[in-house]
Image (tube, rainbow, N blue to C red):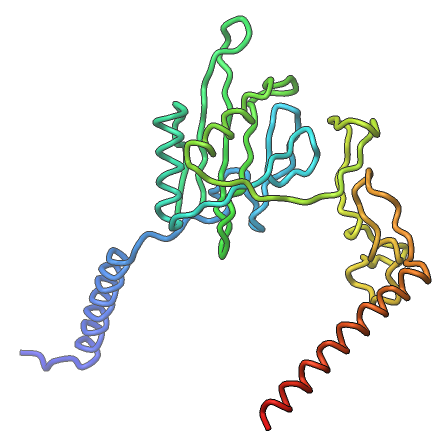
Length: 261
């Protein structure tokens, strides 16, 4: 018999080790939980967690601050997992929609209804549960170009929120009324503190001495009285009140020291 070839045995051992390693890797991958879908698989949601702005009036978004399409985001109260399940249940059971896509923080639903002339119209709604927060951001729009949904998406979202028992986020903004007296779809929102000056700085990035007095003390409510600096009499009265409070505090401290002796 031919003597055993050390080179041949070494090659066979390498193949066995490669096969065994491949088998172990495959088994480990099967035991791992499925990976969360990437942002690219979350509809129109961007990698930064933002939806695109609405491209028509047949749209509602919690991230597009134009008055005609904006609606406040929601606050969920239960755990993230339970809140996502509740939202999906309301979409299918209460609103008659279908879940097109979902993961641990994202839900996309489809709603079909009858429009004018008994035609089928389709609305697409997306919901995103913000990480490290209790906010639910959303965007709902009607498929097709132009036209109006006659407020249907806004009404549907409100029915969903009420069914879930979730609150809207109170948002304070500087609403600038185009018609001065009444609110209209032509209004714009601030806040003016985000506006940049000619050098590219916002008032929040300036030191107090650089910020215009109107930005610090001015009331952004268009119906509020114009801010005025305190008069000499007001300053004197305030100084007298502070002096009285300090005198009362000092007398109280003195009495306490006498009693302690």
